[in-house]
Amino acid sequence: MPSPPRVVVLAGGVGGSKFTLGVRGALAARGVADTAAQLTVVVNTGDDLWLSGVRLQPDVDSIVYALAGVNDTVRGWGRTGDTERAGHELQEWGAGWPWFTLGDLDLGTHLARTGWLREGFSPTEVIERMSHRWPLGARLLPMTDAEVDTTVTVRDAACGQQRDLHFQEWWTRHRATLEPVRFTNPGVEAAVPAPGVLDAIAAADVVLLAPSNPVVSIGPILAVPGIRDALRATRAPVVGVSGIIGGQVVRGMADVCLRAIGVETSAAAVAGLYGARAGAGLLDAWLIAEEDAHLAPEVDGLGIRPLVTPLWMTDAATSAALGEAALAAAGV
Ligand code: FO1
Image (tube, rainbow, N blue to C red; front, side, top):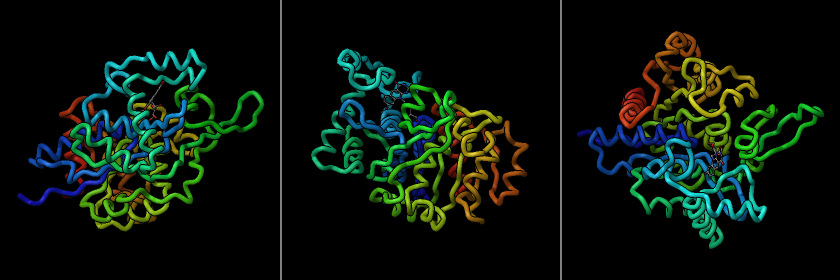
């Protein structure tokens, strides 16, 4: 058997975790026993926040929980079967955000993480520790150890003035209804990629961009100095997967984010946002849905090889089929 490919996935929360499960499933279906040795996931930490004294890493936790099989698949975040007693108690105290739910089991994760951070472990080391509890079948790395939480600048419709919100307040409380002007990650210019990120990209046989929000999930990863250059320099093909199917976002509110940066909600427009590695961009190939097959010539015209394939990840089998299609697109 040829040696299994070394795969790097850049990922955000829900789309990222489903896709990572799919890639892990595809590797397992090829007979790879130790998928963790082959699969590295670089996770967006722009969604992170401090709340009631604890550090939350929503995208990291979504991927950890999904790979461990303990995620709430209905709600899309947190632990399955969780309760909210501690969260209600926090609300009685007037602590935290009343519109942001902290599940009891989830809170255990945040307490463990915060304790380790307070003891001096880096986010990378904390995630490594978290990976010991369950056999995740993947190595998870934060994009950076720096705190570069995403800020959304919105325009207040009433007075026309601009103000800044933490991403989670904009996303969860306002459900992206406040008009975004820009998304920033304060401090990211001075951040460095987490240990292992650049080496993993350089040593990869394929790099995959998950069908995550291109603006607020993949965008912050690419904003960490050094990561974009590493993607352009790696000898591995870079293959992206569209999170837009039939001109609609699959989940989340990526259309609002795209509109804010002047990009149309279309699979071809997102390919254009990432750009062709043959030009000044990142992609060698771009997986689009059958519903968007008519956009293939447009993607091709960007200098990116389009591949039309089913993109809906409705269960383990369809996710693994997509994972396999992404690996096959890279010829590995
Ligand atoms: N999303 C919500 O819509 N409401 C919540 O109350 C909420 C709580 C929450 C707690 C921990 C966590 O890890 C994620 C949580 N999310 C919640 C999801 C999260 O806000 C976003 O969907 C992601 O950050 C976007 O990827």
